[in-house]
Image (cartoon, rainbow, N blue to C red; front, side, top):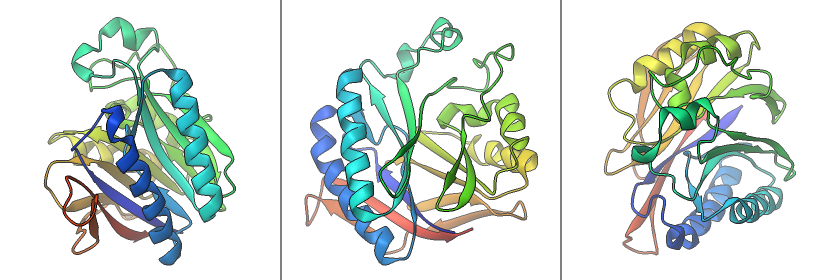
Length: 246
């Protein structure tokens, strides 16, 4: 399976006024995925921002329509309302009320998964709450994949839960500023699953995508010239991509 893996500018992150540019980028990325024979597009978490859950559902519909039109599946996320990580409390995590939602939409527009993120850091997951590995494992383009959302990659119980599902690949969309622990976390997921792990997130200026190959090797690849500004020709928002073969 070929995947169009993305990097997205942090410019306009979690600002509803920026959705117009991001939806334009979404349509372009679907076209790029189709041109490159990629049946799956991987976006970051919080690629779009909703003012409330009703607005979120409208954005889900917009993404599904675009996926159906392109015939390309997509993995990504929509943040809602007061989504700043600084405002997240331990109680929010324990009560499973984080305002971050991940999704998987099939190439026919079917919503295969719509999930609320369960934790944000390496120390605020709740080991007493079983991670729903079965819910997070879905068939995309004929391949069984599992999905971990941003801070969940730091939860060892989550990695073990999806390892039991024996996916062919793991998609790990993140938000922004993932820190030095990103690559070790992706490698731990690989250790539990023994399959490729692909990541996407928002960045200020870096131009490298990150993945763990099937053999456990960290493979960092530059987006080279595969990037565009919106609005054309010079921004302020940009997005980049790289084709990965799993």
